[in-house]
Length: 343
Image 1 (cartoon, rainbow, N blue to C red):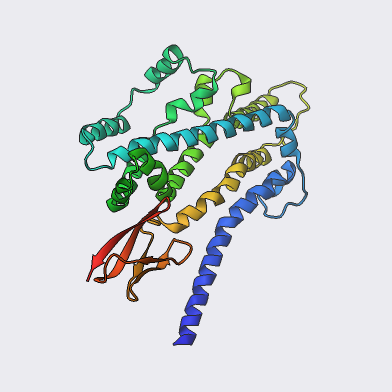
Image 2: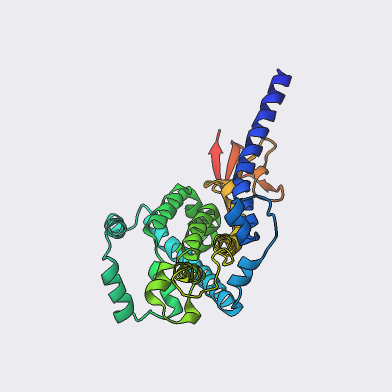
């Protein structure tokens, strides 16, 4: 039985190792092509090991490094500020909607949900942003119009509703206001949901090129994705027109095309690959972690914390001898709030 169990675990490890290799090989292939010679790619196709290492694609992209670095700065700035403000505002909207006693909750929820199904369209949105809000050619056009995502609001609301109401009630008994409960209890317990929403919003903002194409004419405010798209379009234009130019000495094989595409992919995904591991630890914990701090027993006449997230085992005097188990509901400030279960 033990031998069979050992081999079953071995096959599971082999399966997951093959899956990891299958995911890793395409990424390594993109890196290999980006540092390959364009002629080798045209003649021999995609190869995991380059015949000749050539950084011509990166040299072409960084021929004018100021534009790339400036686009990086604009994209990083708008992504970080936009994601932070978006998560704060959406959580502030979702928290009251999760309360059972909120007045007009159903009507407000329907009003918000309606905006997810129907929108004004591209033309009215363009007129609103350019003619009335005057956000065109400003950094705020990347941030303000996309601060609220209705689907993310309902995701956060659902998570907030799953947090035991006894936690908030115990904090209210300690004199905490709704704002204090929101900042000190609800948000710390909601890190997995907030991390999920933040990552999805950051990916959307990082990959956005359509906003820059519509509203930005200033080259200093162009996002990274739109700049890379313009570079790729310029290459395609040169390739299509080089054959029609009399006396042209430009060789299509010498001009980086496929290698530039792969180098652009590496440049675009690099920062997000470094950010993702910081969010991964919250996904691994699950969406319900932290709602209950632990439990204690009173078999010896004292309240002793046996498990949970409280770091040190502490002993407290019991209010009576008739309770055998006490649930630690929250640890708010210096006070330990408990729920007593009688025998």
